[in-house]
Length: 193
Image 1 (spheres, rainbow, N blue to C red):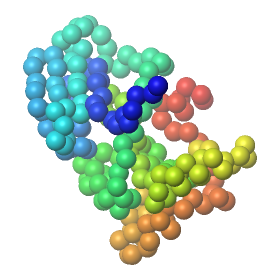
Image 2 (image 1 turned 135 degrees about the horizontal axis):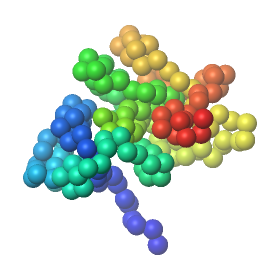
Image 3 (image 1 turned 45 degrees about the vertical axis):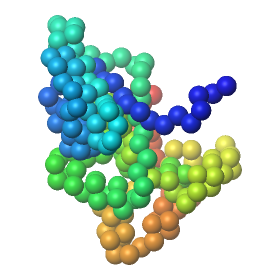
């Protein structure tokens, strides 16, 4: 039997950039520390007791290098956002803070902005392209071998301008079946290159 109704709860990151990580998550999520000691920090951005935990490897396992990374592990953590307008308004604010996505892609069932935090952990913020989850599932089910499984890249500045001008969000989110297939971006791209 599967676990009934799982929802994202929290993510634990090991880091050697504690101060940078805390600043980044405060800026991107509005997360605030709920508990902190010498080695650990727990942050929340909503009513939950914590959404992120950071373990400071400089305290827990001193002597390592900040950029030690392996190929096995979490690729990215995804978060749903209620509307593309909300996501793109946040994109605009984050851009002013020097935080920009490395990939903006319409997957067909969802459109996403992918970011990397100071340690290179990848985060996806996505909006469903259909009004109902069942329609997103139907999009997946209708895919064939010749269908674009990755998606089509988009310019967030263009999309935000169009939404601000009154373009319908659902029309904007409809994938262009003739659009160029995006290469996979981020850490996975470097592994398969």
